[in-house]
Length: 257
Image 1 (cartoon, one colour):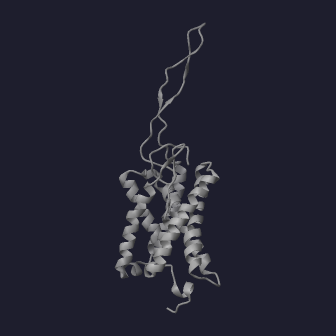
Image 2 (cartoon, helix red, strand yellow):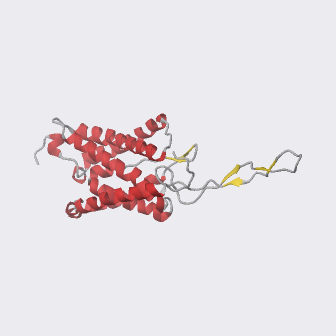
Image 3 (cartoon, one colour):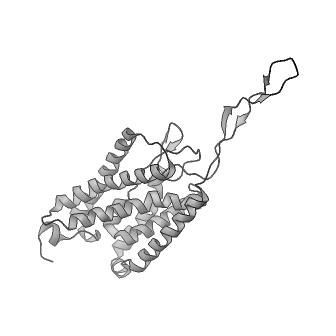
């Protein structure tokens, strides 16, 4: 998705180590007077990893740091520690997200795309814990070398912050509807909310990184994201509704608390 070439890493392919391409670069050199110019022998051209601009990284750090601090202060810690299964589910999510983000098959131009899964985490734990869980998952990828540390802010913005905030907005909009039902939550928020989240991520990434993203590629990526998140949220809502923090039986099913 970017023109930078690197190892598989963040949502837009920011990796850690440079990728050496055996390309030929013809360099003209001056010949002797009266003779035509000759070319130097082809040399391998190393088009390596290029981190985001330092100015962009600095701006993102200043924007994301207060957001993470707010999430840390407002996170529902008591509700989390009150139920052992919620703590277990959060740990499983933190361990699963790096695996999901590492499954990024290369496309032409060394583009790497992957599913996000952050809508599910947002609906299950709330936006505060989702932001913190995404940070820990990103730290795992930095530790194992899939993400470069200088690229962590941009990768966190696109992989975690944008989809979490969009999912929270979609959920808030659904909760303001006068008439709601279970399908509004499962399909409207879980399915279409995750599609909106990854669509916003691609739009923001395209704007910041000037990727020239193909619209057909966007459509191919949004549907799997919606299907995976919608299926997981539907299953959790039906079988383990007590684990889903943002689900309310009274609101969506009309049941008394």
